[in-house]
Structure formats: structure tokens, C-alpha cells
Length: 259
Image (tube, rainbow, N blue to C red; front, side):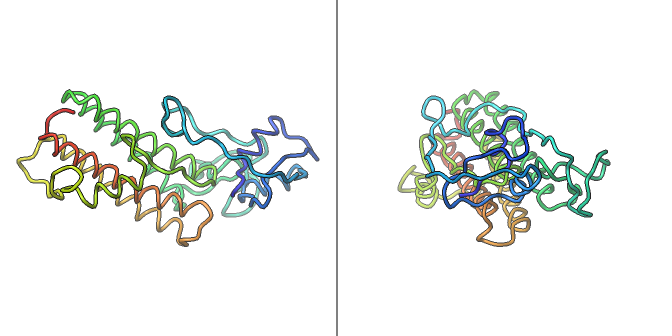
């Protein structure tokens, strides 16, 4: 388990030198959490981990909720990841990598974050198209896709593992089964969209393609398959493309009509 800087700040509220913080036994501190501990001389107290609930409102995953502004900045002067020095005035070329560090906007994680943000925007735009087509249920599922994009951005920023994706009452294993056997599960063949298909299907297909491109960008940002939190971001994007493909299949199974 990885303990993030934001998790420590939740306990501290107002950091003070020598304060005690509780961490799960055997946990690893993220780089920004290590910096916070060193800066304030915090004392770590180990305790047995406590499982947090996966479900949010109405049985949904905890990340499947309306968006809020996700970033809380640290109270200490941030450090530049390039020169290692403190940054009192943020130049235009730098941005917040995490609560305690500024990095160039060309940093691989910043590039990835921007593309996931764009992916969320495309999911919301596709949801708007679905509502215009009279498909409230599809729009709701696309809202879940957008929420999972926010979960991925939060996991990357806070240097924690991303939660598993879910949609339409299906976990990622169930989505995998449907998308690998659409004829047996939905009564339709694998998709090869054509020029005569409904516009909404093409919006979904574009969204799926974008997810796959962002997955490649994540692989470049987190080179190791054993990265402590990046591996879960890559995995989440891989499964998210299956989720969007599932929505495509379900639309075709409904005859291209609103569902």
C-alpha cells in the first residue's frame, strides 16, 4: 500500500514540527509524502490497515460522483523537480506536479494529465450527444466514464493506485467477458463501424480510440510495469477502452436506437 502526501495532510490538517501521523503497517510513502515527513520531522506510527468501502452513493464506486476541483496545494514552498531548489514565484513554464513539487509542463506526467483531462471532456461531449439523441441511460454511463477519467487524474496527482473501473453494474472482469464474446453475450458481432452507422456510434468509437492513445502515453510516462501507482493508471486506461467498446456494442445491440 502507498501512503500519499494528501493522505497525511488529511490527518494533520495544520502541519507542525514533530507531529505524529498513523500509517498502515508495511506501507510505502510516496515521494511527496516522504518530502512532507522530512520537512516537518513527522513521527510515523504504524497500525494495521483498515479497508475502506469501495461503494459510493447508491452502490456506485466511490469515484463515480460529480466532479470537484481536485487539487489542494501544500503549505510549504514547492520544490522544482529540475533544479531541486525552492520556488517562491511560479514561472509560466512550470506547473504543480503534486502538492510539494513544480515540474516543467513538458514532464511526461503533465502531458499524460492533460490528455486524460481532454479524454474526460470528450466523454462529457459524447454524453451530451447521447442526451440529444434521447439516450439518457447511455449519457449516464458516459458520465461514469468521465468520472473514471477524474479518478485516474486524482490517482496520478496524489501518487496512489487507481480504483477499478465499473459501468452498468459490471466490474472490469464482466466487461472483459462481454467485449470478448459479444455474439454470445449481446447477440452482435465485433464492431467494424461504417460510414452509414449512426453518428452517436462514431462519437463512441472516437472516444475508444482516444482512450487507446492515452494508454500508450501512460506507458511512456510510467515505463515499469511494476511502478507503484502508475501501473494501475495504465491498467485502468486499458480497461476503460473495453468499457467504451462495451457501450458501442450495447448501442448496436439496441439497433442504434436510444437505450
